[in-house]
Length: 523
Image: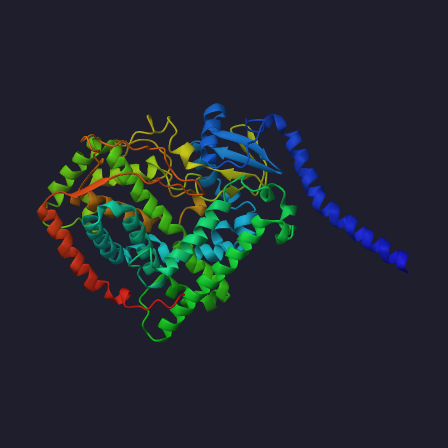
């Protein structure tokens, strides 16, 4: 009897082993059989890179728009042109809309609760439906009053303490996202505990989501190493508990205010109204509410920081043209509004070039995954491949953007061929395109218009009166990348412009009382 039991256990172990190893062997045989048709790529794979997008661009320059890497057991394809990304991720979206397995960010850190990293399926479709309904273009336009009011606060902050411009940009971005999501604004990013805790969460997420950084992504069995022997695992599990507490407490506060009839229209309210019909558990709703909160702050603030960097480095080449247009359309007695944007084509071109020139999502956002074998221009792309479309390669591709490191809004003032409707690829492609693209575009365009209307932005002078140069390649590491600290001079264009800013700020404070009066109960 005992011998039969051992035999049955042995058979089960063997069966389990072969169930794991057989798909791997089949995949390796498929790759071997199609090896001559795989896209070109290097034989030596670099790992642990702090800024992998720099290496990816080198690969695209050397091997072309489609590059093949064998990173552990997973085939990886790097796309280096807008056309290649459009052809695969947009036109063939049915094959390229899933996600690779994210062990660090998706499983250990998030427990499978982040829709951004979820594979194509019921969970993702539910998440996507909610995000689209909350941030589609028509719905996003209802958030414009909040964006406008917070923008007026931003202008006043830049007028009073221009040297703190990075903090002011962060506060603006954080307050818009938190107000739109939870109906409560942010007055100071240094003291707001919710912003602090969310910043910690996003820092951890972006650091663990860098392709090739952690061996566990290539060798999934390492996931089961006990935390005591794996500090990298212990750290993300600790952060996961903090994230659950944060998102749960925020939704509890929303429910309490909703019950009292004191909750303004916001995304979290929309989620609670849809929860029962969709059959979503509380934790899934809490994580869904945190999606824009997590993704929108760094991207909006980083993009506006890149705009100021461009003003410092290339200002004389485009700022006077933009200000001439603003003076003609707006004058000096009022601020630009959303209604003015159709009459400000050059300002809109400045915003588009900002998104193109230094994309915050340097890796093209979260990688895609193929769900079926495919052939593109004679190259075989295996099922299960990780597809990375790094914007650092795509937006700096000389064939689409000659002299790509130069800031030239004129790229967007005429008709030119480029796949898609934006003229750039900042928001991704296909079914995985950024749900917050309308909200994000509106923030970038309005604030660029108002900053150019209100201020003279340029280089800081040294003790000898000479311009202090800035490094346009000094950007942070991580899943997203934004400018490292740089000197920037921000001065009002005239006393009249300053007076308008001050008056609009006072009026904005009155309108923002509804969101300011909410007590912060999240500790």
